[in-house]
Length: 178
Length: 236
Image 1 (spheres, each protein chain N blue to C red):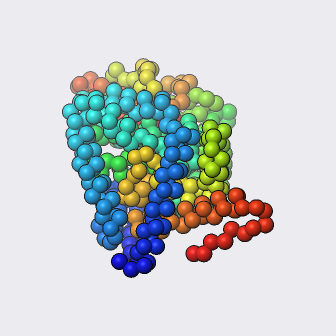
Image 2 (image 1 turned 30 degrees about the vertical axis):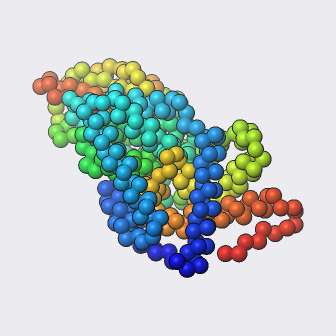
């Protein structure tokens, strides 16, 4: 072991102490809120072994794989304005979910603190559809014979849709924040 | 002698499995006693994590709670380190756990769960920042340029003078340094592989960056405590 190693070791241990000190401060100042811990524990109650998951495959708000931190060009794309709705309406966001045999498309339009959802299920004829909140509670979705539905003044937050087809197939969409 | 590892991880963001493979390869390539030791400690807790995942999958609620207790602090640190407000950070952490529940039966490498979790929370955080920036019509190139949420911790909670000074110095660091240190400050301390995933940073540059950020922190500290006019001199 030469002298350089000693210096490195001393600096490393001083650095470790400083990080430990910061960790102690962060623990005092920036405690993870209890409701965040509770939400993490409660996430397991949303487990659904009987339904097929329709994963989020497209989002006009571009929270996809692109990372603006490392690619300015992608960022420019990500920051392109989403298409605006008709006069007086808020902005719309388009979301698509896909499972093995079905697709779910959602158009989310903001209205102040609330959102209107226009949706469409394709691939099967669904009934018993609901909009579920991660925070608990749900709303019934009236799906017409073409698979379309409209639900207004939805509370913002983490939601997913859940359906059962006439043939008994169950589908649930991935959670998404609207 | 520091061994630098180049990583191809920059070109393909958002693919956790690819990124984790790259990060692990980089980790294997690292020489040095500390990292080897750290790696050995990681593999112990990784095996433990894999076991908890297997139990949670079979419906064991206690194992799920143990998983959330072990990792929620780190996820919170990543989100807050990316300057999300408390409300937004709470949302992305919850979303990350919901995503894990959605995919619990398809977790392919449960021993690397922490890396998957931090990659997911980072991606969700970027999504929130992007949507918020759009709402504010902000023009910015990097998330580091987005102003902090403005609900910073209350320094009044700190009683010791040195603690107040240290936290003030921390707040004076660049956003990049703050976010790195925030993640390193998580309890329990994350492995470098997980830090790499959380910050989209090659494993090989974490050590040198940490060293730079900590020496910048010391510099700010000494400039705050020295009488006016005295220059903080530091030989590097």
